[in-house]
Length: 315
Image 1 (tube, rainbow, N blue to C red):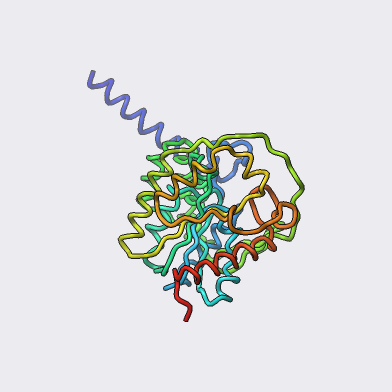
Image 2: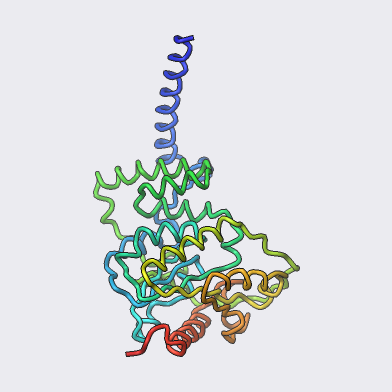
């Protein structure tokens, strides 16, 4: 029996070493289509790498933006800066509350904002957050929180990508690749210092959507509660904002009021589908992302709200 146990241990160690080497080799050299369970998105999309690479340049800001692509494509830091509000956009692709919590633990104290505008979308509260976790662990530093996040989500892609990301960070440091600057223009997207991503101007074509009901993931609401507790401990004002979607997309969902009611229970909440006056064809480039004209309307509405409600006192 003892020999059998020793044999199993040896085989397990061999398997672990072999699997680790395989992940490193496969992640490094295999094309993406051949590695579906390693989704390493380093500098791939959304400019997460650039955003996190310059975050240390921002201290004691007025507004910190959080959320998904609706945040980093919807809250133009230039517009807020022109209104006298120093800001940083810490949004990331498909970011859900479980990733927001990790980012806040890493960067809240250094950014030290007066207030936080957290974009909350029914879309992100209806997902498992795997896509966003892959984006964060591929482009940010990884620590104990990364391991906890992987264990909580318990997904093979996350485990493999996290392991490969640790290897990649060592490789990058050895070859000084960390000093490499990401191109600020990719396709129709331009990265703006401070975290915003501007898309080349585009108009949206009308689409008629069938009725559908949001199916919410309860782990996201639990993470939101922890975020609120974290922010409250630092006496930072937190405003929850739903960015607008096209009216057809928004009205196709039959339980929007249910989402509003639930989010309202967590604190100050504004649904800008009911506030900003936007046109589906003129102010969006897809069903739930604003073009630059729409961004300007939304952001000026938010700025007016901030000063009107005295969330920040104009100096």
